[in-house]
Image 1 (cartoon, one colour):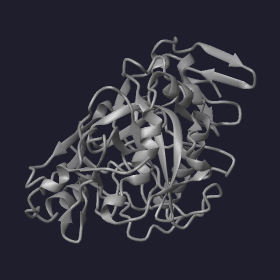
Image 2 (cartoon, helix red, strand yellow):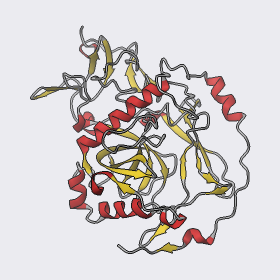
Image 3 (tube, one colour):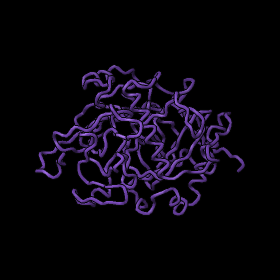
Length: 382
């Protein structure tokens, strides 16, 4: 089947984030959906997309309880959990002519529309075994918590359209404690959309089930980001946290536009160019719940960080679990799967339905005033 890139290019159309369509695609091309993929294939939703067609609408803040909802450029409400694509564009892709190909061993990187199973994807690189070329992939990260802040903002997975809001426990707004010498979160903290750590799946590495959330990301770039910001990141490695008996992977990544991104490509580069950062990360995750009277967290691999390739394999797995969730092939419990753009999902709703969900959401109630304890330091022996 001839690649459409070799033909006269028809008019392009801007397609906002979604499970099946994302980024700027050539009119008439239909990306592959989640159905029909075998266990040995990886067919990502929204491959080759960018966050350029998205915006976050932040509703009024009442006593620190801010709620961020997401719209696309057409003003349609969407779910950041389900409708923002996992995959972003590639910086390298912009530097390579559209039809140039590079062969390295058994892999062919095609900078054009790549045919998979008779259907086209606009992509960065696909190998012969239909897995994404790791070296060129960028991921969309949804920032929940900016660096140096304490409010525990997170994607509300149990609310329709999954806004970002501050977590509440026992009627009180949640804040993370300051573990000396740090203030709040020591990275921009967030999640990868279209991923899910299945609580019914026992991880064969950690021996524990997933934590029922999108996979977490620690972005280590120099810029302090905003809650609700969508950042294109390079994955560098992963830490296997076991939090109260649940697998809670922590992806280490850096924004693609960070000044140091050109020299940091894998976890060993972090050790070289940001000495002490990974050790501080382990200490932070080990201790951050101790001030609340809970035991120290544990880690697989004795707290050793695994490299980029390992991390991408974990992301692939959680993306497959998410696809099963969105197509009713996995039990999601109280997770809300309502979405606007995921092709073939039985949970897909109309633009009008999404608007009604937002308009009918309960008004935000006043939370407690921020306790001075939030600014306290907690000291623990090394």
